[in-house]
Image (tube, rainbow, N blue to C red; front, side, top):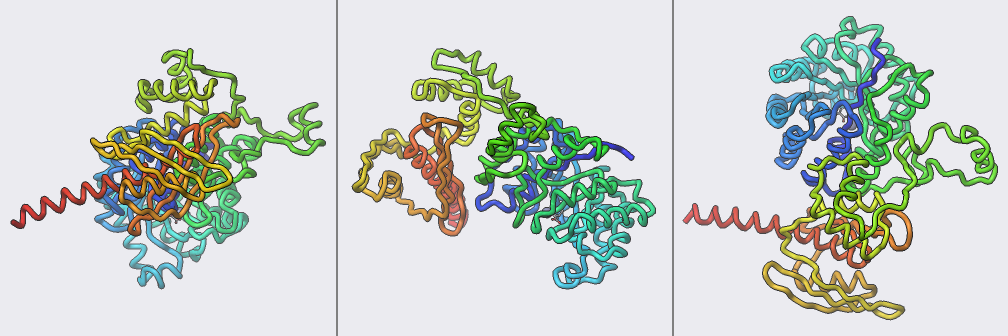
Length: 517
Ligand code: KIV
Ligand code: ZN
């Protein structure tokens, strides 16, 4: 049996569908670049029929990513499959992923169909997808709760119809490792054409078993694992791919398999996904948590000082965690900044060196030393920033202390600059009052987070907000050495997105009116 485990990443599909505010096309492309650098074999970029935005994201990713295969999801419905194929056709290599539920509860209560019809729908879906590509994946949704005879029948029929990968999801995270491993083993023993397809697994984490179940499946013969970075996904999330990667590497003798991942990209990819998805990583999370490699107890520290292997089963360097050496200063030139970006593996098309260098100089003037993590933060933020934004913060002054805070601002509103001042129960509150008054937008904040980027009290602060405006959720981010300014940028990020959407709607409406007249 082949000893390579294919890594199928669904951060941009299963992961993204669980976020409170959707990612923009630009953000999804940034994540796709990171996944490509990580060496992911297949990137599930979205569910194109679900919205024009999802279609555009899949198409954009398909256009730009060359080293990973791009996949799109479709129900076992002709239109979904045709739309998926349309979004993927610009890709160098692509896969269509189609699925239907197979568990009795889903078939009877959700689909309200007979199982024979379900098998036939699955077969027709695979055949339709095969008109577009030889690389077709078929998933039996809720396979973990599907009676084994029914599952064997569906898997055999899908392979006969031309599926080259058959995926066995534990959609509701219900199974335990011995049970899930045994499902895979039974498929290998009972499905006559099983050697014609790769068997894949896709486990959810409702009972905290997703990684253990996936590993049990690999031990039983599965050769594709689906999951997400940091385990983000529906409800309790998906199988964490960084955990799978490091289990397979660290226990390679026991596992007898390998992946094609570049493990030293794990840390960086994890931080990017956390940042863009606005999903903090718990400190004690395996592999990528802040404490994953830190030893607190005196006995452990003593042991590690004598021999690292006493308490360390893998090194921080193996996931790309480096000690941040003193880096750049305002005397460093563009070439030095570019060389640091090259060393970190960023391609020139991922950022604009002129913009990055300008931002770097401003930060270096403020902060003195600029580290690699600062450069990364500046790059990500510059990619989010909208140079044509209608509202821009030109000036900010804050007075705060143990009494009410006062903020005054100058805000660029298109061609004009307006001034405003307000008091609030803190500087952010006062600043937000100014912005609401000048823009006329009243936003409800669902979430407000401040995080330090990197180390030290002189570091960059990042503000993330989830804002609700007329029932739609928006994610706004701001980055500055001043956390009040970062908070203002986050709100303006949201207001500029709303303003742009309002303008587009106005133009559409006026076109309609002109046509009617
Ligand atoms: O969890 C699940 O069953 C899925 C399928 C669409 C593969 O996400
Ligand atoms: Zn899923």
